[in-house]
Structure formats: structure tokens, C-alpha cells
Length: 121
Image (cartoon, rainbow, N blue to C red):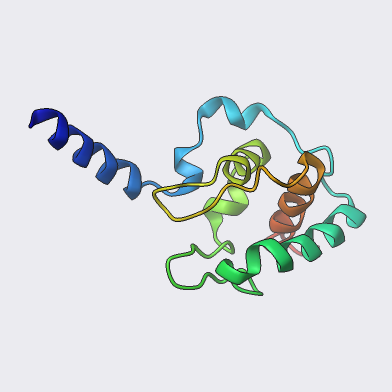
């Protein structure tokens, strides 16, 4: 009975975390090979439309349970953390894994996401 209670409590705690918060600290060490690459940003925009927009919305504002991606938590997250989230998803938040996408395509999506909230010159 105690074990069952532990599982319920652990699930509740994990589900309260956003996918960005659930990434291991070591994931922050990975850097984006396409950082500031305009071609990668454009490719990422196309991939976002196909892979992410159905849940997060065409403008990344979030739909239903899917979190909005135009928020400081996403923009301030290390690229490696965002990569970890795309690769692993978040079962508790209802986000699927995008490990089926080749690694360069996941980086292109991240390049696009980071451009959404980039300060304008």
C-alpha cells in the first residue's frame, strides 16, 4: 500500500514540472550547432509547422494542454535542455518524443524556437 502511495505522489510531483524543468542538468552542456544560422531557422520553421504546431499552435501560443512556447522559460532554456525535451518528450505533460527526427532536424526546430523571442536589434 505504501509503495502505491509513493507511485501516486511521485507521479503528481513529476507532472507538476514542465518538460524544461524535468531535463537533467547535464543536458545544458550540449550546444546548438545551428545557433544563429538563418537557413536552419527557416528549416526549423517548416519542421515546427509540421511537427509542433498541431499542439502548440501556428504561433507557438499553446493549445489546450500544450504549453505556449513564447515564454521566458523556453527562450532562456539552454539549447541542450530544449534538445533533451524534444528527444525525450514528457509523458506526464502529454508531449511525445521526437527522437524519430534526425538530430539536425531537432536542432533546426530549436533554432526556430529561440528566434521567436529573440530581442529585436
